[in-house]
Length: 238
Image (cartoon, rainbow, N blue to C red; front, side, top):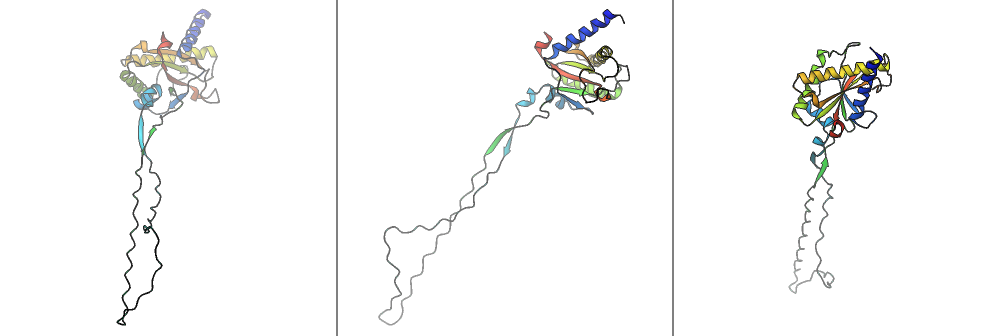
């Protein structure tokens, strides 16, 4: 490859990367299996889930009812008198004591519903990633990963206003220039797959990240090879 051609490709990849967002690196949620459309939507379109609330019934503790003391008569009372003896010599029966009033039961207070926001599925992630196992020095998508890309296509069909940057990432094997070009070719292969499944290519942007943003500590680790999807905002594509 001629130096001028290689320089042009690198400049194009870097320029596209700067259009995505003014940030160092996306917070990516990696999926080993095929996610649902709702999982993808919750990450790529978080405002579609942020307004959801649910009602949580929290029972409040209720104090045990206190017995109500019988009311006492007002004013002065005379001390109790002993039983009197009748003039006939027989004892008069003592007056039967009045029955004590039963304690009143206090009804427990009704529990008040408390409004609480439902926690989002992924608090920090703003990008979706798949570890597509491209062969060495290849941009051919293995059929085992078609299902993951089909979910992305389904989300794009359901959300016609959504546009995505498709980022290719490599491990650190090889030079920086080589990996920039290879990662972009892999991102373009994903875009071709999506356009072949009815998605407008104008809603997708290929970005080659190369080995610049490893996902794990060891930059040579093959787990750094991946494709990420990041939402494009209108100001990013203008």
